Image 1 (cartoon, helix red, strand yellow):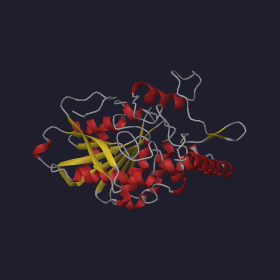
Image 2: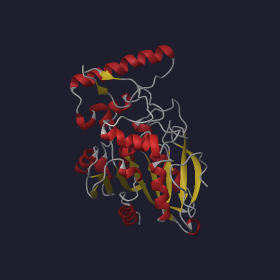
Image 3: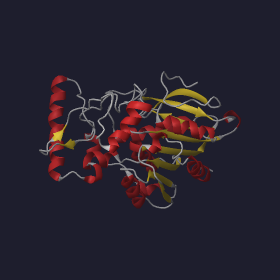
Image 4: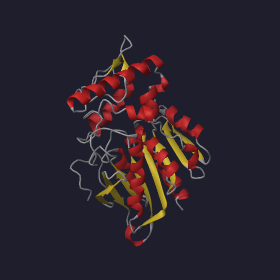
Length: 333
């Protein structure tokens, strides 16, 4: 069985699960849960590597996707990115667009060396904030034959421009000044202070930089998007190794996402296919729509009726697994 102390999904007794470890090209040890389909040892199987959402762990949405795809015949690896979950790397609870992208290729390295995997039939899936890394990795790593994203967040755009690109140039400057001053403080103390990974502004147009205090319950008039995230991360899928609603990112973490935009190579995925899936009512829908516009053929944008962003984390009635299976089977031949 998968050796984890806390699961947010019910393990299927018909699926073999193993916790595995492998290194990326920076020498960071990554942890993943490998889900194996029935009869996997008798043939060369297609494989899929999966990560996300941003700040989540492999015991949450990526594990759910991996187990479901294993039930459908795919060797599936859900992995924690560097610095997070059970994966290695210091400083903890930080992120890098480049290293998170590399982690996808490291996962491909691992599954492609398994004797029961056909290394010419490997796909990648990104959920929420790891979608941009899955696409960026696929643009360069031609071993990935197809890529799909669900509830995409472009974390570089989100952190550096704000939701719906609302930051003014004045606000961007204030954020950069905050990061720069925080670096002085971190250098002086020899530690890395926690902070939010998305900066908002108060009524005086000053950055809100305090970390979130997670309550037992949110007020009834809370932002609906925040409420949906809270219900998932703090309630039904809470996990002690996750960052979201359990711990905090490092305050200066967004600097690398300001400096290095994701998905600039999206056109280079062609002629390999892209499937972009988003909820019809998702606040993040525009990320998938804009990625679709930027990508070259073959590409497909699938909007799920009456679904929001978080529905595609764990709502089995709304995640289009039949469509995902069809996409992978057609393109991992």
